[in-house]
Image (tube, rainbow, N blue to C red; front, side, top):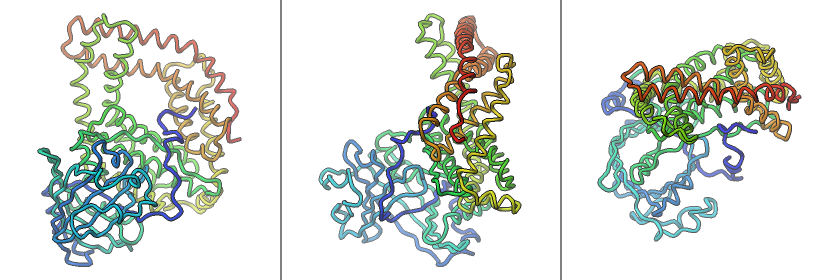
Length: 528
């Protein structure tokens, strides 16, 4: 069975139309007002500027139905006024890629919506069935924009320095950001220029558009956590294309969870960001045996650093929202578990503060921009031997089969003498199996079928049983932290109840472990 951390085919984006619509490729970087001012006058901008630039006042009103029909379908519709000019713009988010959006623009004689100016047959539902009378203002933006065009790394980039507000009724949010829009050339130039700006002023990679922030403000809507989509690898791809697809897939999931984590949208956000980093690190590990690229080393190091910062927040989330409620559901409400939840909250808040600090650190933005540039430039080719270039040219199917076979063998080796494995050895086996599952999911599009689903089902069930012991160990560490503070007898009693319950769960899971291991050990590799 596929992993619950990977969105299933029903959630996948629909096939691209034959004639793709106009697309906007844009990188957004949040900046303090001071950083924005520093960048406006920076020599870096002047050296690459094609013109002196212009400053405009942009006032926009965003429209939707009262139940957010457009927003719920990934659409945003606005009328923007700049001086005497009015422009109607419809944008559609690209599923899975926060930097890319479809965009249709039309000049208006005044500020009145005119849906007939949009290619409704091409855009489709739900807009095609709506009339302007069904739409009402949802929120507005008031922006002062300094706009210049830059020549950089063979690309034409439009840079916008935006400051202003997003307004919904009596509520407002400040805007202070830099937008880099690709007009000509390769998207890698956006990331590379972003890196150059980081040397001038502190910036933070941002993925929420003004419309997304406006909807959040107007409707108290938080961004949703993003699960991984299936990797888009085809039978005709070579190994180089497969690597680009795998790394790009992990990158999109990572970027997609920046806003949900930053806005504290819920425990799933931190979880999915951790999943994206684990998938990335698993990919880098299994690729290392095939392409020992020095360019991938710092990416792995930074992914590990960010993952470690997320760990405590995820552990406290699980404890507060899963472990304690699960025990209460078993009829142990009288164990006084509420005292544990209350004692854990300050620890969770502290861990989330550490996450926000890590995300705001320019080092994190440097990692994200460097990773994006590496994918666009296929930087893993740099500094590798000629033999590696031959590997990159081979069919993806052969490449995948070799990696899967190697990862499978390593997992079987870890599980040798399964019945007598010490706890640490079982923990290492669990990690090896997790790496194997991610690797199998990466290459699943090349071998999707009953055999692959059966293999992944056995692997997932084995992982789940092994994970209970790891969960219990993590909980023991958390409770030790709680007991180290000021805790009365109620807290110690509740902690003992948790320990007893998890011990029982671990014993019950242990009875199934040998059987699940034997089933997995006997599973036929679907890539053979």
